[in-house]
Length: 292
Ligand code: GUN
Image (cartoon, rainbow, N blue to C red; front, top):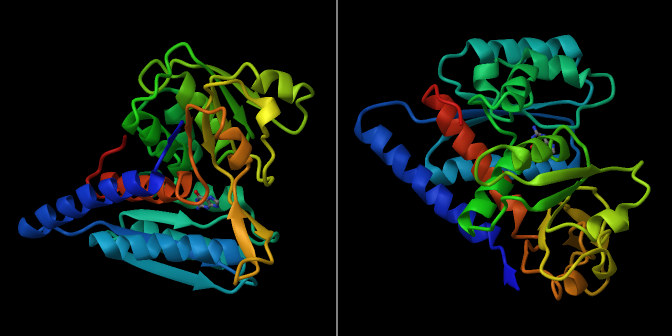
């Protein structure tokens, strides 16, 4: 069994991007600039956004964090996005999700300039991805593709089971894994809350991408020997033995499933850091007027 070290791979990618920043500076060109919008004080969102902004600084990008009260009006938020769209110094815009209930997420995403949509959530970019055109690939699935590639994990003809159908992870992941390129060419099954025979399907999987948001959901009896496990879950659970009183676990029971897996991502230190590395790559592409 090999542990997929997302932290290490993300550090390598960040180093490569930092070198590109050094080159841009040497040529007197502007460095990539990411604008992040955070509405309210959701603790998980606070952590994610802080980590994105910190990573920008580490590799020499500029970043701007716009924080708004949870009560901000939808109109006001849209005006801020439009002004970032028009600001030539800003290359990438991300609005951290989820948003408060009174704000229409779809409208917010539709307002971001597709050329600055480094999350790849705008319908124009989703359409481009489905059509196999260059686009911004959503950061979590993009990070997973980079991990599969880095570890040269065989994917052609394999049965990939994606658990979860969110627009952020499950749906784009299933499209990318079925594409006619490496990593891809998988036969993909998407499972979700209405799937009735989940265990049976998982037992047929060569690759499982777990993006359900339920701690330790995938157990050893659900997987076959040699399976590749990609665990997207980041669940905080109580643990009285920890100083903080809690710890992070994935959607997969690492202890038991790792005994059967050929490759497995740990939580933390697997997919999480790669999501940030992928976002930074997208932001670099946006600054160069390119898409993946
Ligand atoms: N919330 C959970 N994941 C993401 C993400 O990748 N991007 C944004 N903007 N919000 C999220």
